[in-house]
Image 1 (spheres, rainbow, N blue to C red):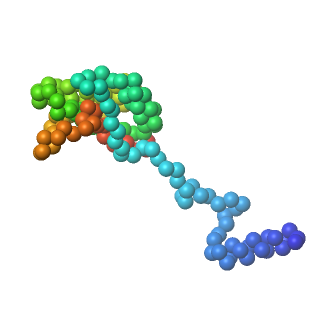
Image 2 (cartoon, rainbow, N blue to C red):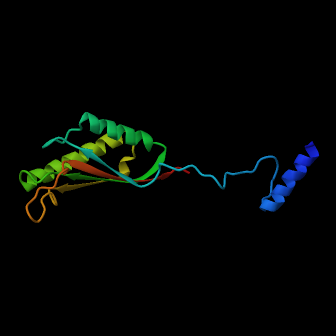
Image 3 (spheres, rainbow, N blue to C red):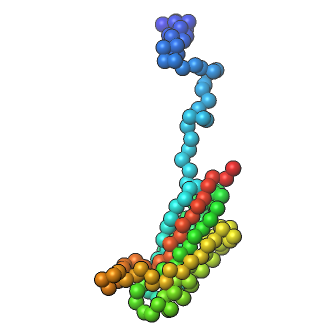
Length: 151
């Protein structure tokens, strides 16, 4: 097939498909977008029993999350400290406050904006069900992040 035949065939295909070509390549920037990691998300940081110090795994999780969101506009960070149902309620409240503060400080040290933090202590509220069964996985801090792409 000759060069003019190929051009004629391409022009016919364009007309049939209803597409228009503006130059040799189409601008697809409005059609194709990259997914963003800058969105609302939640993660948990776990602690050893009766401890408010970060474990090595917790440090790694905080570091990885902080690095992943470093290019985002972090609007708010809600840190909720929780404790198990063992021990007295006041001790658990204080422990959950300490856990939330520890996570807040670690995220702030990683470069997250300190004014964005809201810190809460859930203590042992909800750690024991109505029938007296202790709920598992309460020795943690829940972190809820609202992040948007930077403009």
